[in-house]
View 1 (tube, rainbow, N blue to C red):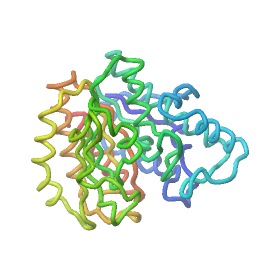
View 2: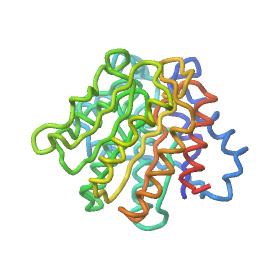
View 3: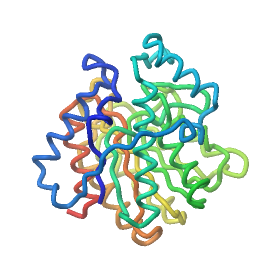
View 4: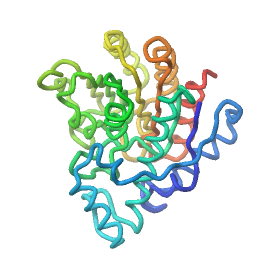
Length: 310
């Protein structure tokens, strides 16, 4: 099991007063050091990405705009995502680290990896959105297809916010299996992910969105779990991506979900066993959102522990 950690990843943040600040990584890292999991994982250094990595999913106009605004050091990429000097390079470190994790898994160096500062699932092909400059989840999917000859990918997302950038980026792709449990878009950004959004064209009926009402707790999640399991039993993925955002935990300042860490543990434990059966154990976990620092620490440590099998 690989864990990617380092100051270069922590740089992806918009200041300590911002909900997505660099101190998110510090909160997780301190919890990891106290967790006793150090002997179960190999800590890997972050890896700088390249422009061509971002272009696997994003348009050249978007990548060029991020680079130019980053050099200027001010402005807004979108209404929610401010520019800071070096944001382009910081975002490419997230991309490069995720792609290194993909490569290490596909090369057989490890079967599982966790990148805590990643899972930036809102950015579309042509624009940033919701604190997400480049969509490393979607870039990883494209890299699996173009660089590693993997067609069937399973994407599972338990972040409180709907993964609109991933969903609409692959809405008509029948080879991307998609499960997203999130707060109903009528009450939370980005306003998407209705149960009726099941894919289009050749992928119609192939995606699973489960919007939950504000205040949804573990009982409601586990009420829906048989539906999720039934969906997963019909898939034959070659690779699994888990976006395990901690903002679905009760008490997050930006959302209204009421999950406990047991949801993260359950999903990671199930997927670990599922991956052993279907795809040689290949799982890439990405930290995603989460704006209560103690929740980030506990939920991600629970996820990491479950993926380690402890």
